[in-house]
Image (tube, rainbow, N blue to C red; front, side, top):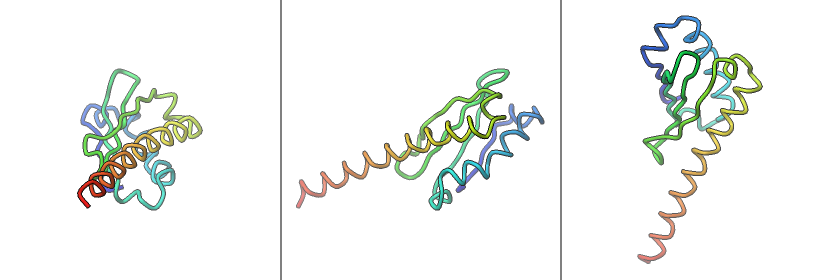
Length: 108
């Protein structure tokens, strides 16, 4: 990952922080060879829920996916939600690239 940020509220909950940090490898495998271009930011959204924001140069504000602790504790459920979030970021990247191609075509 380009960066892996976990907010202080999560860090103050060692059990939750351990679960999230334990999912880094799974997320990097889902993203694949472009993982070094993607940033991940985790934020607490409640007692037993967190959000993951994935971002890259095409979508600096990122795409957000919410997780319950139960979803994070299950590799199967976490992987599914990681795939959805990654798909959302890829779709945003695709839209930006299409827009740039259309603008270049209009100029040329």
